[in-house]
Image 1 (tube, rainbow, N blue to C red):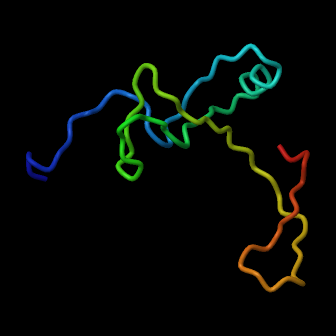
Image 2 (cartoon, one colour; image 1 turned 30 degrees about the vertical axis):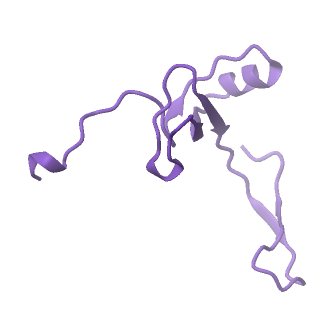
Image 3 (cartoon, one colour; image 1 turned 90 degrees about the vertical axis):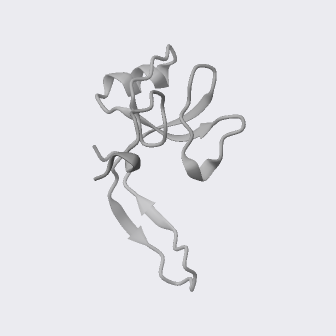
Length: 93
């Protein structure tokens, strides 16, 4: 690969960056002790274009999500719609 097509590493948080979240609420403590890392799903940055994945720096807002894996236990087929409602198992680990 030629030199002019490479990008230097950019510090900051962008989409799909794994994060360790420090939170004092009960939900935050439970998420922290579960051992699953949270990851960023959106960066709210002033002046940044969404599709170009702006990097969050100090003072920017980010949306964090913790991935849960569930099992599909039922599906309603009576509807003719591309968005079929799914049922999930609540206690899946």
